[in-house]
Length: 142
Image: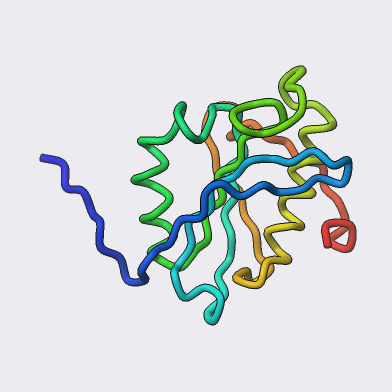
């Protein structure tokens, strides 16, 4: 028997859609789950950046996983990569330099939010689990 947990230590709110602006003007679509009190008790963020369309391709999985993690003190941000789902732009291939650049900009954006502690991690499987982001000095990400 599978048990569904739907009560958490911290109440959760979901913000959808959120459009994260890239420096070239492209907007990437995201859904963010975070503790309801994160504005007064900031939390670290966890980024999931994949092309599997957050509003249909992964929606049922996301509705279980991300609220659970957010309810335990993290902000979860599920982003459609450039050119997928509701994100603007063109998806030309896997693991492009543009995708790496976008990931760095999203990480910096998440770290700068008022509800964020400034710490950002990533999670993923399949495409999102194979990310090999370039090592950059922390000063470039801020």
